[in-house]
Length: 71
Image 1 (tube, helix red, strand yellow):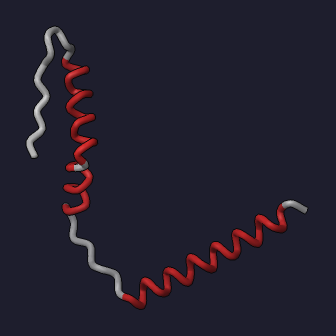
Image 2: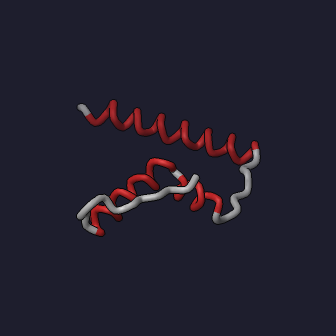
């Protein structure tokens, strides 16, 4: 999964760097490495359920605000 960027003719260093950066972003390698850099504990079922309920509560509240904001 090595990424290479060789200079084409009289290509500037900035352009070469941009091309390399674009190749890196396409592979998603950097994103994966950043995610792996720190350990994240898996959420418990209880916590997932509580967060889902809270999310639903916020959504209902926002929907209510949207409905009454047109008056």
